[in-house]
Amino acid sequence: MKKLVHYILLSLTSVAGLLFFMSFPALFTFRGGDSEHLGIKLSAFFKGLAETSTQLIKPSSWQFFEGWFRETVIDRYTYSIEIIFVSLLFTIFIGSLIAYAFMHLSYSHRSKVKHFLNFFEGLPDLLIIFMIQMVLFTLYREFHIRIVTMYGLAGKEPLIFPMIINSILPSLFLAQFLIKIMEEEFEKHYILLGQAKGLSKMQLLFTHLTRNIVPIVSIHFKTIIYLVLTNLVLVEHMFILDGYIQELYNLMMEQGASPASILFYVGVFMLPVFIVERLVTFFGKNAGKARGLNI
Image (cartoon, rainbow, N blue to C red):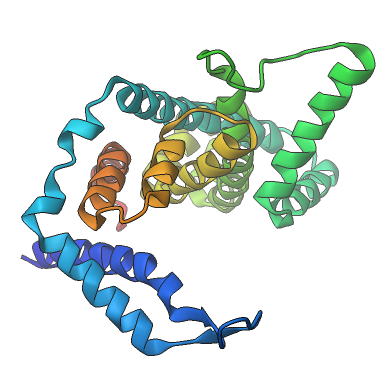
């Protein structure tokens, strides 16, 4: 019952957020006829909110299924979903590789790696993607070296490059999280007992420590999923990819776009992401219970 109420409230707040988002521009208006200064007009905002809410419950605004099932929309949808889920695989692989390599470093080198990860964590996502973009531009312009196809041209969209770019920052975040958990786990008694028995660090890491941190990582993996999702907006825009984000943008820029159609388009896009997030969380909780962890 508690979970049912939670999901009902989650759905209601999502719809309320959409209505607020669509009505928010009406809050601002120019002062006077020819003024260049913006002012706030609450009455226009509430009027826009009421009109948007009315449009949402009108049956005539629900006729959007035919538009979504067009071939171009389906292609954009599958392309973006493919980028998201393969980016998650890249994120898990790169983040885990960094974390396990870190645990094999000497203590004198670990602090340098932590400073490096902390430095990149503090940089805005947009800046890092822009820097990568500029490096690839320079290599091609100065040395005629094209490492990857960056842009979608002539109906052919790149796959590997946006997936890698989309997973760089989430993988660094995952690496930081894994390093923190591993270092804490390495101080526990079962690790000390394994060291006393003469087990190698490799055996301790991959056989014992990994099994204990998987439930904790699974529970917090939703943060990684939504990092990948938000980075997709930047990647598709900066590299001119004809993905589903472009479809959402075109829909929202339409004059008098139906709130119901926007809610449907966003909901269909988020549904597989939400399902994966729920499955990972469910797996983490069950794995934790099997190992006697209270999570």
